[in-house]
Image (cartoon, helix red, strand yellow):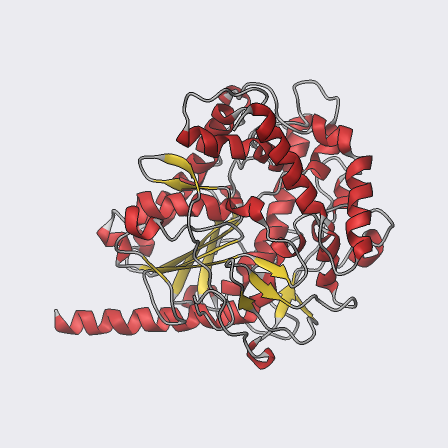
Length: 477
């Protein structure tokens, strides 16, 4: 594809993101919002050569501060409660040390244009970094930006990883993730894998690849610190990740679990949501790790991408994947698609019964009224991330989230359609999560929270299965 063709495809992808919503006016409002912030969005898109020297420094994973969630962090240590301790009002969690499994969770992209907008025009290209510059000098614009991103990471880990805290101790690493606007070069990176001699034009796939290496290096180092900790040597673990976090987990599974028998023995399951997981990986690089087909299998992977019935197919979430020894490659062929209510992997399969949906939870701030902040005529595009506040603030918002709110989702059922997309009914207007109708990626941010209690129960079931299988194996030995 030519450079102009790639630019055209990015434009089409952007238009596709504006489509959808329960009502036509949702699309119109998002279009007006995109037009009003077009210049700032362009200024937040990395276009300079990637410089690892300006990419900050890797977090120190020997310290709790290197982790967004860590079982060693005490209750109430931060304004946004650690995901290990988050629960709905009145619910009791098992003691952290008594949980039988560990969870390594990789958070999704949190450096959004809204967070970058307040830094437009700052020296040093602050508003358009390739990766989050953690480790920058305190008090500088880069440090303030990083602090704002870290608070968003805490929010997203609270939304997505808290479903595992009944069974697991949660370890979620801080990492120098790639900015969302860097992803505009992602299609070119996928094409580069098939045509290394292609003309680049305005696209910068080599720089994006270097940025991903920084993000993956941080995640890998955190995982090695986690999995090789002698204190956890005999404990089972699960992996979970969303969006960019899921993309990095795809590589981690191939490089750090599939080829390590001692780790595979402890590996229970991977919940990889919000990014495509090609089925071809299970014949090319994953041979011991298998696609999940039920609620019980272990040493396996589940994956899904959520959309409502009238939403467009989120094609931007299945552009490319990492293949061992090949790098980033275009996705060809079908992708793994599981229903996180029934755990079926059948494409175009049956619809789950509404009674099977066990409930959604969300980490609602107690010091900010999301409904008031995001109810204006022009949507922020990241309502559930408090986009209107972040675009008017430099650094942290000071969110206070001590627990989880049970969210009314109406009568919710789910099925995977013929394209492998998990389809659910549109959420009722009174539901807190219905703000996602005016977000750029629609129900993308709901992949875990919408099925919170189903995930909670499933990880418990899989860990029990793994434990019983391990006991049988030990008795035979």
